[in-house]
Length: 416
Image 1 (cartoon, helix red, strand yellow):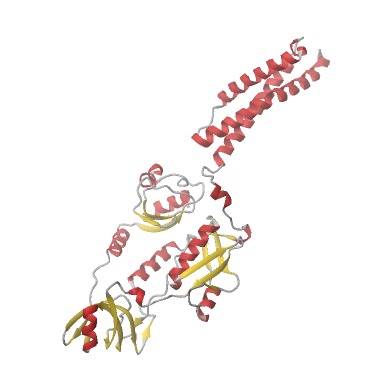
Image 2 (cartoon, one colour):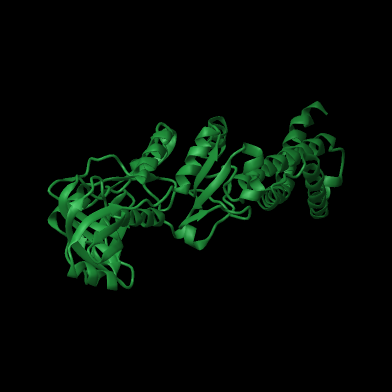
């Protein structure tokens, strides 16, 4: 009997592997399906019971095919076979469960076709994956538009832009085109990126710089007058003439000296403050377009957008004085001031893949109750302000959130 134990052990291993293949495959499949679609793992006892049931059916079929399995005493072989079946089934179930938890929930043909960046061009900045986009070759012109000026063409070719590296190449092309239109006021842009983050650009220069600032029914009139110091494009002014006062909006200004280094406008100041708060966070900095020239004051020329009847008045008489009118207090800056006084800060974040917000909604995530922060805006293809609880989020979405510095730090750890 002692001499037959090694044979029985080998026989048990053979029977265990032979009868355990199907239970292992079924256990892996069930573990994957349950975890992927429901997020729930099958208990180990259920896996054991199900695997033994299938193995018993397989053993019965083997016994019908081979009568030697039912002859004599094979207690050792059967025990080892059962252990082998259970180990195979439990291991296969664990692997299926792991695959179900790591496989992305949203797989589409579009996502399979999306190009991704090469790992050689991705840099880690503050724990974030970033990529620097450069221009490859010359900047081409777009058919049907005037050609670019040499200075603008050189500036575009030498510029660089930094973006998150966790978005598809097509999304990077869209974001780069938007930034170019904003920063350089281009009429049209065509962008193509390769896997090395090199951009092929075709652009059209700004067209109709003055006319596109006029509303329908308005006319632009240039007048010679004493220009107040600090006047810039967009100011509301009142022009005093012998025939009465004319209200209008400044569309351009020129004096003996035109300064671009005067104190920033409130919009630029708010953007700079936002950038200062985000330093060290690895967050993407919003590039602010250069501010419009600001008049240094003195005798100069104002170009003002006015209604057609007022344009006739300005053309028929001289302007004795230009007065800048108050546009009131900007409510958004009042809100920012109130938040800062209450100890709250505004921060810009990007949703990380496999984070608590990836693939869920704001309501399901319970952002306000769980993390004590509020989401002010969400951006995927475009900005959506004051999002509701049914707003769906995914990796790469950008958020503007408000909360205390401690709450923002905790929220950033689990989201960005």
